[in-house]
Image (tube, rainbow over all chains, first blue to last red; front, side, top):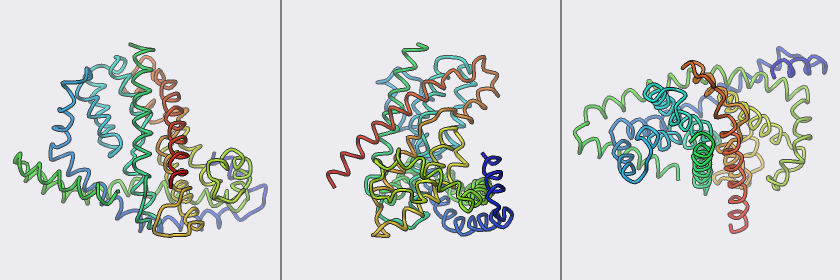
Length: 159
Length: 191
């Protein structure tokens, strides 16, 4: 991708170095608005996870579903924290073996969802939008549909 | 909504921590969060600076406008408020393409650029425009062809078949995106 862009720029005879530096400069302006949003999100998500609330919340579902606790935690954690869900995925691989059914299911779930809260907070925060209307609701709906589809597919293909 | 959730997360965490006697833990978490977020920031900042630089070459050379022109036919029905061939269509397509290949960190700067360019078209600067809602929705349900990070992790664990779940991921992200687009169209008509 980088190669194509640079070659195209070369063919169009623009000042590549100048253009690159000008573009990079914008990162500082962006950084100023991104950092406070990042800090705020990480603060509240960490407090929620470390207080043990999430574990308790997840344990509510266990009796009704035939899925291991780590997998439910993964589903609940993925939309709010990328690093926490990656850590959970590592735990699942270690515990059940990377090629086991639960690991495959966990991989599929990890692949089909995004860190929704983080994206919404960052994207809207960076341009100073106060009212995000139905952004979070629709995105979480998308995650839900994605997770459901991958669970069904996993049972059909690997189960 | 983010505002409310943020407060709830924080309060729920603190109250639950106090009840179960994890209050020391909570204090530590709050203090460490500042350090953690700086670490995350240090990780993503260079990537953002790098891609914004490369992106600027693509913008000035006209490559971005070309991409916007090609993809505007596909994206236009989704973003009826955005003028045809507008630059933000180029940013949005770059973001979507980076997401398709699982390059989350490269997708973020394109996404931020797309948002600021959509903000220029936005009439009320405090309220999210329809195009923004559609864009973040497509972004979070992100159609993924190659989940790079995931495959790398599975390889690290010496999986016999690291790409086994790729098809599942592709299908479920496509289904999620279609479901989101339908929901978006319904909601947009009502409001």
